[in-house]
Image 1 (cartoon, rainbow, N blue to C red):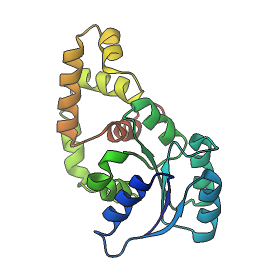
Image 2: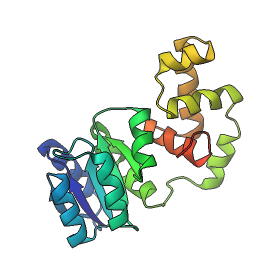
Image 3: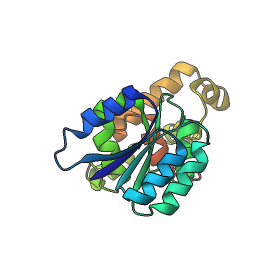
Image 4: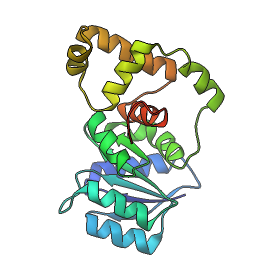
Length: 197
């Protein structure tokens, strides 16, 4: 597994390299500090995975992701961010990103994010489908609104319920579906047509 990292922050580079070292067959094949370098290295190295900081300088990463997808049709392109945002996760996945990973979670969730991005589910599909059957209609409404980028307070106002109730629904949804981040919620909502990709 050859991974290209496009990120200008030393701490992120160290975190990715440390996580990759736990997998003997994985390696960081290149590091880019700008969008221009990311495109050039992607074309030259043809990596299996590209990890892209959404804050890369001198160009919108929202434009960079589709370009990388066109260049590397078989690769997983995963957006890295310091912000947990359903709206951002939805936007990047709509533009072709395979995942949206928070930088503080790299050490714990990078491997799973890459596996999912490459279409290698970490949980049996049947078990996941069975869990999904236990999601209530109200939970589906909450999930759809959160995945579309609305904050807890906004969801509460839209559904006429308290913010605490929204937080409870969110916790139950994530527990039932074994999801652990907003990007995972967005992926689930898109896959099950609860929101538009």
